[in-house]
Image (tube, rainbow, N blue to C red; front, side, top):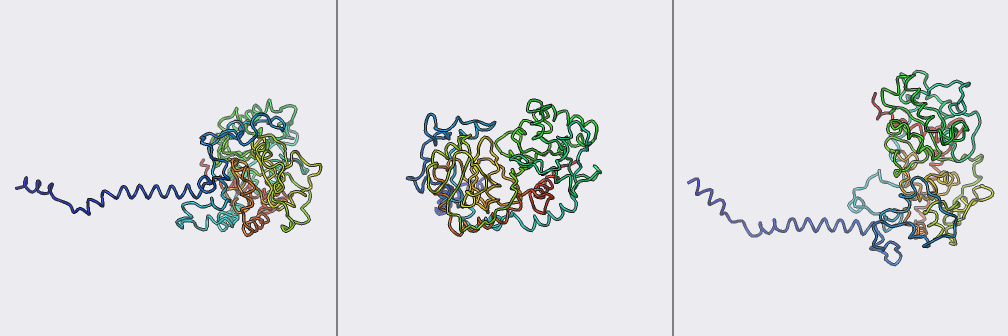
Length: 463
């Protein structure tokens, strides 16, 4: 009997519609997935929308930036290469176009209504309420212990802050040190400190005839050896609650003889790029490169900006060579080879957009110069970990463009509507205060914003 019922059950016939459902189900899922992928590609690429204007139809997986430049020699000076130039600038995959090109700014989240307030590009902060609340707490409780050094130390010029206002493009590390030494964040009790500051100046070490670039790594190695033997704080975390500052690109090799410091310590640096080994965005902090101006512009009125975009600089990278190749004679984008006799900001003040184009290194002061003169920054620096990106929504006050979009740069910028340009310009005025060094420091300026970035990282350190 049992045998017979089992046999009968195995012979049971299912309705045809039931079989058809199971036959069509995987086919339907496959077609749906294909359509979703097609919609995403279609709405995020010019390849299928404007083949006539697209320079990206070459069937190449590794596309050379030199393909955007006149083959063979150029009319410009020999292009210099930085540590990361060779790989980063010359070869990369086919790009996506700028998120500001209207036909390309959609994502699957936009198509199906999954975007929320966190993706609102008109807000300058990722979360205003959280930032203001945490900022208040940081101001009240955050403490830093600075390793002490006496004025008669042989390297006092490297270890102690200046009593004057330094000038030049790499002085952010000096302004930060001076502000920190005079702030309420300093504690003389290391047991209540959240972080420990190693106050050597990479910039001064580079120019000190006793050290220079040749002995820089040895100085840093000896310094860490000394504090780790004199104090117990380095050894209990492997240096994870320690930090140092640097704005010159030589900082990329400063820690090469102290691997533990490079991997564990917080590096507060201007040369903040995802591409270079040794920089970790979740651990390290991007320090804004600011060339401090003596005076504010008399007027920042946007109605007097009658030029589309402006750039001036040397051709010291393939990216800049491509920019000049395409736009050096353009009437809308003013690309000037070299500098000006007087850097009075006149050109920035008459331009809607100011270009930051990666040169010998990924960082320059052009981003903060643009903000100073009320000009919307255009970031042409792939892999740049922009300053204060944990706090600020860069899409709300800048335009980020891929290297490979250089041939269509004018079209991208002209495609930004008057309304979009207005809120970009308004937000530039709101964020200017975050990119200024003041003596003494002022709430929400570059010093306090940098301190907030450090405060965010203190919670990841466990003793």
